[in-house]
Image 1 (spheres, rainbow, N blue to C red):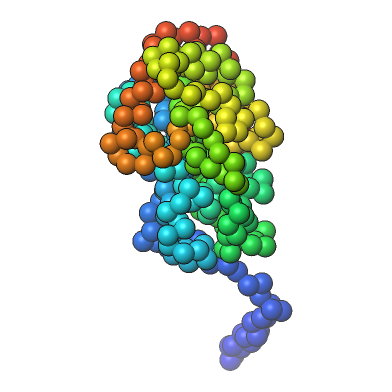
Image 2: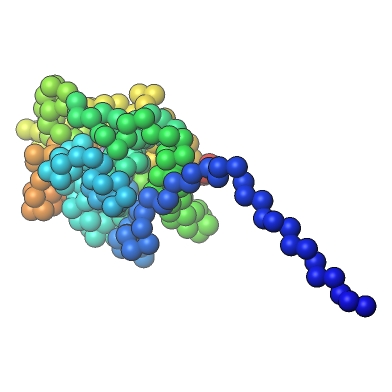
Length: 289
Ligand SMILES: [Zn+2]
């Protein structure tokens, strides 16, 4: 009997396949997070949300001039140098964000509008104008989430060993924003961890009476806009101790100056860490992904 050759059913072509956006990061581009001194045996982690000003090729310089990407709206000038120096001095791993905050701001909750700001310091960011839900999700998936998850894993490493890590968040602020001058040399920010912050503030003032030390300046972590940001998610919500420091950018805009100011801060911070009191009686809560 002759075998029937099965009839080929014509392949159905879906009606107008939804146009897919391609990846943000090309395979040859760096990962969104870099960890310096990953084997550091110190008391916690240095976190630098705004270390880098790199922009993935696909985002074409965010539609900005190259010179604009060197300004404070793209990153925290000096913060990476400070973080690296502190990482060595305290023997702590330093978590550095590689891509510009204009791509996805690590210091904001992923669903908050400022995570991909359309305007910063009166400069419009063309690549962030009217972003589709899909385009936003791609950036979160490829840039924001891997960074946050890496911090989560590093914290977990401590917790598994029965240790309570301290998170030290390093930022820098522009001396003028939206036309308003910001005079502080250095500033400590907090939400619930006021006690630790005040200890560092007092030490800074004691060591350097000439310094203008800010308290929750130029903005406050008590502000709603920071709900769900890196330190809130990994420290506040988990009940971990943290210190959030801001340096004025004109004081730290070369490596040499950054190291000098990192040392001023370290001199105030180290006794607070060594006192051990900040690590006591903390029930650590799980990280919410
Ligand atoms: Zn910052």
